[in-house]
Amino acid sequence: MATSPTEHRAKIAEARNVLGEVIARARFAGEPTVLINRGKEAAVIVGYDFYEQALEDRAVIEQLRQRAEEPPAGAKADVQNKARVIREALAAAES
Image (cartoon, rainbow, N blue to C red; front, side, top):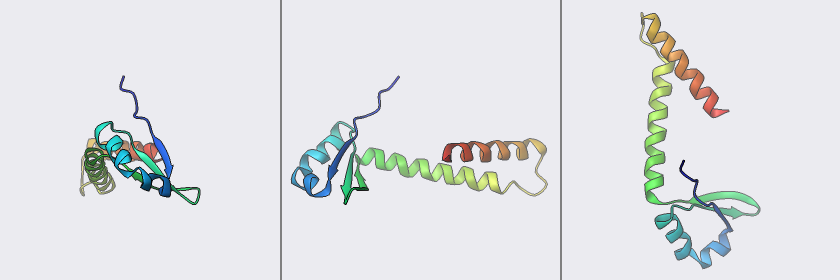
């Protein structure tokens, strides 16, 4: 089982002072840093590989959502059933 990376948290002003370290942790150790502004999460610094994968994942999810919402006219029952299963899986993942 893969372990999840350590997540760091830092106020923006503090992270600015050690930006090189924050970037190195994200890039080489895969450890994201959540930036805090006025007590609220404002942004996350992650490695570029993670960012690229997140974009790809988002595109795949959007394609699944579109296909599940618009089964072709006159689609067979199994296609409609698969679309329903995908809709239910996406809804469960979002909650």
